Length: 144
Image (tube, rainbow, N blue to C red; front, side, top):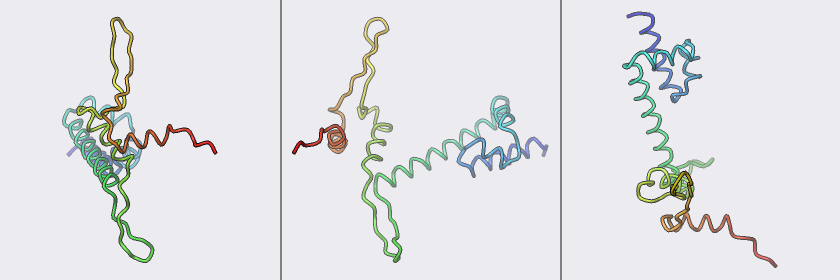
C-alpha cells in the first residue's frame, strides 16, 4: 500500500472520529486540509467514502434531534433515572426541515411576474404547539 493510500485511510478514520470536521480530522491524520480537498476532487472512491461519513454524521445528528424531541432518559446525582420533557423547539425544527414537503414551513417564496419575490408565512400549516410558541413570543405584555 502506498503512503498516499495509507494517509487517505488515516484521514477517513479521522473524519469519522471528528464528525467530518475537516480541520480537526486533518490535524489528527497529519495531513493538510488542501490535500484532503485535492483527494476529494481527484479520487472518486475517496469522495464516495467521505460522502458516506457525512451521511453517518447526519444520521447521528438526526438521532440526537429525535432524542430531544422525545425527551431523554437522565440520571440525577442520587442515581435516580428520569425522563426529560420533549423539547418543543426540536419538534418544530424537525417538522420545518423534514416535513417541509408536507407544508411545515413558516414561509413560502412566491415569484410574481418579473423578478419580484414575495415571502408568505402560512400559519395554517403549523402545529398547535408551534402556534402557541409563536403567540407567546409575539404577545405584548399585559398592562396593569
